[in-house]
Image (cartoon, rainbow over all chains, first blue to last red):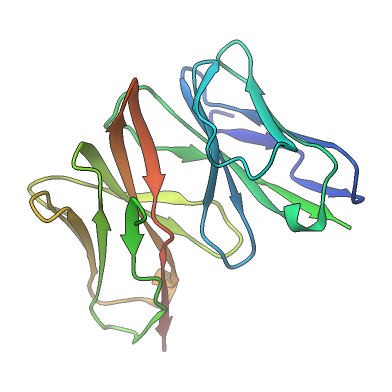
Length: 114
Length: 112
């Protein structure tokens, strides 16, 4: 399809395990954002990429969280040594480099840490 | 101070009511403005862009006041299906380009 895709759609893991979440942007979208949303809460900004570089990583909650983007396309968000408080929906959104453009969201990955 | 601020609500209104949401932003270099809608357990989706002259899309009217740095959304003749969280979004200029910033959202419940 032509939209933003994310995988897996659901992930259940045990506390202490590492997880990797993937985002495939819309073709040609240079900007890519990761957000986290806990149940009933607003969007929490994590990090964004412009091409392969990350101008703003200020939202990453701890050094257990990291993200990379290669080839200006696919991005992965990695959470090491997961904790129960990491349970949330992780949303990816992409957009072009034009300031007038909007963001398009993927369906999210629901992460549950037991 | 948050870069984009919204009243979290919730707003509880009867069907047919008119309801208005406001949003303020702090970065005077902000250039583009949007309202998104998020339904429960779904991803946010664009509702409408906000233009300087104000714009309307059916029952929805968006306005921008650059001098006061606020954006508004008016919903007329509310429907049950309008129940959702409404997110104010700003594309704010920064070094090297711009960054998109979401408000925390305003929850709306429309009741029969």
